[in-house]
Length: 383
Image 1 (cartoon, rainbow, N blue to C red):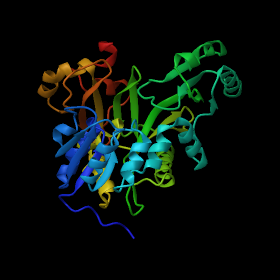
Image 2 (cartoon, rainbow, N blue to C red):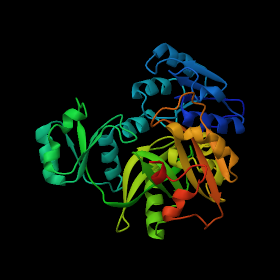
Image 3 (cartoon, rainbow, N blue to C red):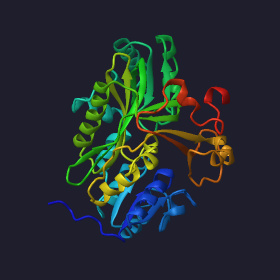
Image 4 (cartoon, rainbow, N blue to C red):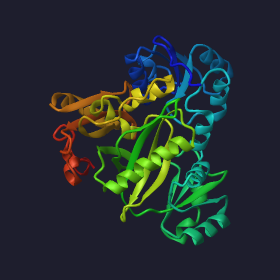
């Protein structure tokens, strides 16, 4: 029997105090819910807009218990939290997505094995633990390849490119690895895409359109919605995301990041079981954003319609990009979002800007890079 939806006035507990929690809390408020944030950070972006906050380490069992007792359901806004802590919360209150979903997404080996088991293709990969294992993996997969830690890697961290067998010398030591690593075959891709998909408590699935992601210095720079890919590629990406949502037993929302090869194949790269940077455009280009969809799924409400009413380009504001704020708010057509972070540091996501276009009128190729000029010059000029 499907659980009753949370009534208005109920409290949603969000583990993590970053910008994804902030935008989730804002979406929850629109639906009549309160949010309580658990975070080790004082004055976190999410806590600034929430009804309550527990400031404590994620491993603090007493704080976890107090937090669970103060909320009606638990969710999380990023993966780098101990799975044991989420399991403790799940023993006290409904937790969506589940600790098992978090456990799979936190470990690249578990993640890739899961994807292949449910029939979602990935780049070739191999587990290894030492220099001899790396040599065997290179012999099997070939070069170029990417050596990665199995946990805690994001925005290009925890990775080493292996362009030839000679590059393998010292690669394990450079990653400071004490446990298993994974070697992934390098994909000569045409573009990187992602799909944000939600699954409700009744098993209903709703996916936003396939988007293209462009990176700068290993951090997402632009997201183009929709991606300019063939209809068959789009269908394959949407099918893979829906298969992951059902196969992992999702209650909530996730993003599936994928490579599109030059011959149009789709290879899954990473599962992120929470709202995703590449879905920020949905706030302005859809009637129901990824954040509202996440809250709907977590609260047991019917999922909303993920259709676009506009095409969109989303631009991240990284580090000192935020200093362009006066020019951004002065330029008609740009929709700004700041995250409430006091200090701009290199590589830190300070906010984002969205520009909308009529359906079918999205700029392509290099034209997309100029969509925010003159307020934000193209990356090639700034770099």
